[in-house]
Length: 98
Image 1 (cartoon, one colour):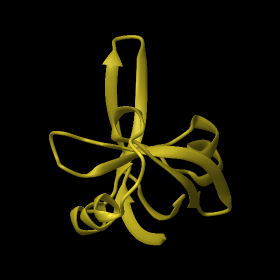
Image 2 (tube, one colour):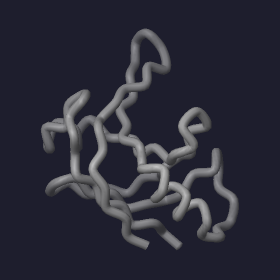
Image 3 (cartoon, one colour):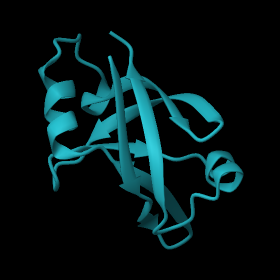
Image 4 (cartoon, one colour):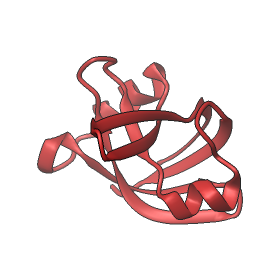
């Protein structure tokens, strides 16, 4: 299944010396993804192919308990190649692996 959406880049700081960057999958799309039956994966993750601009990569989206949405981690190389800085709005496409 393919999903497209716009989202803001945000940062989660796991420790003082590292930061992880994500975009959140909108609530409605997250609910659609959750409804597709899949074998259980670690942390409730779903494997996806993600695209922002010209960058495409394989990764997983993870459920965020606080928001109820899935979150997509953004690699540093993708952020740099696409100018996806903290607070930037980016156009995202994800294809789930059924």
